[in-house]
Length: 167
Image (cartoon, rainbow, N blue to C red; front, side, top):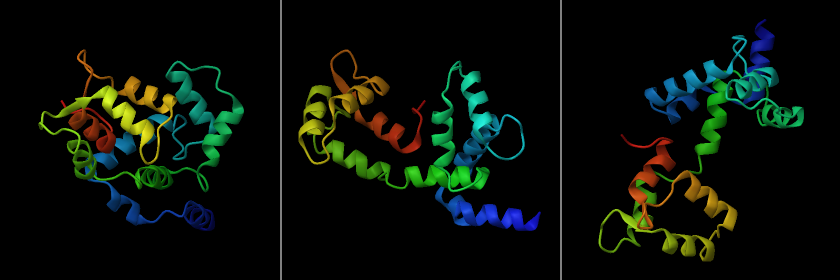
C-alpha cells in the first residue's frame, strides 16, 4: 500500500504547504465540501462521486465527457490534499481584498461604498483585460446592482475574496 500512497502524493504535486494557504475555518469548509462530494466515502472523489453530487443538486443528465474533464483537471486521484491544492491554484491569482477594494475606491470619489453599475460595466468592457458582454451578465447575475443601479463594491470584494456574503 505504501508505494501506491507515495505515487498519489507525487502525482498530485501536493505538499503540506497547501494548508498554509488557508485559515483553519476555510480548511474546515473545504473538508465539509469534500466529504459531501465523496459520496462513496472512500477518501477520493471520482466520476461517480461527481455524478452523484450533481444528482443530489438536481442535475441528472450530466454527460460522461463533462465528468471526465472535471476529473482530468486533477494531476492524479483526488484525495483531500489534491482537492485543497486544486482550489488553492484556482484562487492563487486572486488579489487580496484590500487591493480590489482600493481599485473600486478610485471610482468612488465620494466614499459611499458603491459605484454606478453602468459605469463599472463600461470600464470593464473598455479597459485593460476587457470583459465580454457574457462576463458582465454573469457578474451582474451573481451580484446584481440595487434598484438605483448601484453596485455595492465592498460586499462584492468580500465575496470575490471570501466566497460568501457578509452577514
